[in-house]
Image (cartoon, rainbow, N blue to C red; front, top):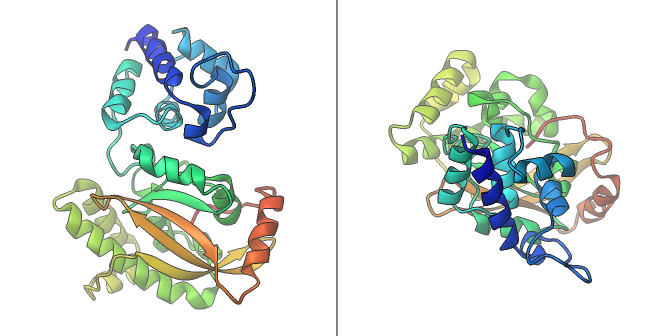
Length: 282
């Protein structure tokens, strides 16, 4: 652990980023070459005082979640992200965890989708990052770790997680999730994380075990969904996917289905924000 070097590295990365690179307005009369401390704090979900202490190399030791948030806020590459974890004395998270590295290019695209619900997930359906409209539409990602971070896991083990879809759609969604997961597991090869997820689901869900035995496989590249919002009712949306080169991450964004009321509902969603959101993601 080297908190002084951690702070110096944060400052060096902050200085190189322009506000427009992270979806912020540059504003007049800026006195710093890159981002201000308060802007990094805002992007990382931290208080300004806490971030200032980190950059000064003070006594605060950042959590793994905070290191991940800072790496995303500062658009760090993979080697830079790992370096930040080492300086903080924290273990580098596995590729499929909720603290996994998100490619800066995907984060750039996410920033440009400010008027559209969008989020980045892993191929095991772990939510990595969401924009505000995605939180308003789908609910915030849970703080669960391990297999419980996967929405597929919660879908088959926690009935409350299914409230986001109308009951008539549950059977189709179950089949889609399992077929997509089978493709991800095969692509990962002998991967302990994927293996643990499948083994746990087979032991805990008879529905999953039965679907898994069908050996259906289909990567979910796009889908039409009916999302049940607690305030707006059912929204008909197209869920579109941009898949990373290695297939392990996806940028999802949601657009209204033409000929439905969903365009107006999504506009209202930006007004409602997250004030009525009480469920978890997907």
